[in-house]
Image 1: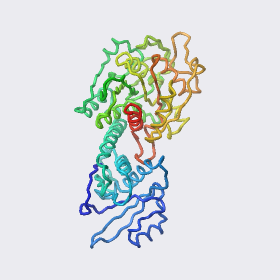
Image 2: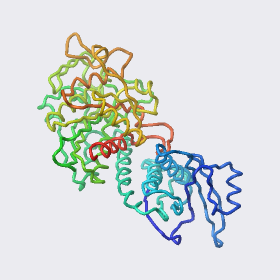
Image 3: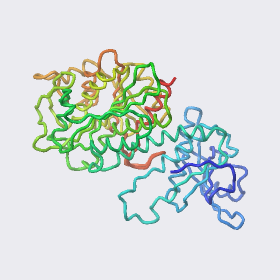
Image 4: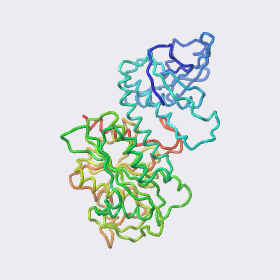
Length: 485
């Protein structure tokens, strides 16, 4: 979706939109339009859209009004994004190619106007590459949004929000592509192409290099696939003199479950088991595009989990890069095996002060939280509170879960240092306890289980059904509020 700015009514297309607060339909609107809105029971509630057709000098004018609702400061930005998203959702396949959103007389700040545009753009992302027989009425027609009479400073505010949108859309693209298109090598190639010229430093490790480093846990997952694994590191060094922060993403580009194979039903969804790595890649793009004043390293452990004759078996013992041994009870609990070596490697290589990992790690987190929140586990209360605040501000919301020794002992193994799964109950917690064993003393760490939020089967305020891009806005907000403060 292309966003342009204009100050003259002479450039407005046939479709003209306004944002309307609840109970405040514009007095300047034609009396018949106001009467029609009342008849349609349009009150300006959040998410409502009302449409009217009028004659303008003998030409047809299509008017749209999106409801803002009644929100205080805490929910106003989200409501503005929702209003912009609602407009795009209604007109994306309407036959209109352009929509002007008139901010004249709205009283919005530049930040608020940019929020409307962000919602409109994010809701307009679609991935129709493989849909060759779409009926015309289902094809996307809307490709341009014109910000008309935008408040002073909106274009500058939009530069930042546009960078965030770039990152979210890149994440959605990676998550949506099928596993025969996105696998460890092609994931790296996609990042190299997208991040070229941004100033990000990239480092890629192949399987032999990881073997030389002793990454037996990650390589154990990869050994059943003909697709070789990769470790990808991306560094944005926008600030000197500080210890870096590391974002680590689980990148299982397809997860059959390995020998502990998953049921066939819905296994196609496992193309998005690399959603954590995709969120890290999208975040790095956003940070570079907006020239963030922070030192951030994004690490993606990339593997495919397949059940061929070389695949690891339940009962195998592997040695992680940290030297700790792991009894593999269930080969479908593979994400934590990838993360433990990635976390060890980033600590030994970059010595970050803080690590935040993101992973579509457990089905148990979906049972607990549905699709409304991601689960958060942390060894540091300040970091947890900072991420919670970033989640509320960005809309990528989190809910904190406990950690403790009572859960930790559930993953003790009788023949190795630990096993990769605990008992049936508390599965998300024991997974987090496993990862925590690989975090060095003194490093602030948070684990985000995003299994329920990276892919949703119904449309939301700023996303269509499918890939959401969850995590990019959360991490970017954390960087803005904490690392750039």
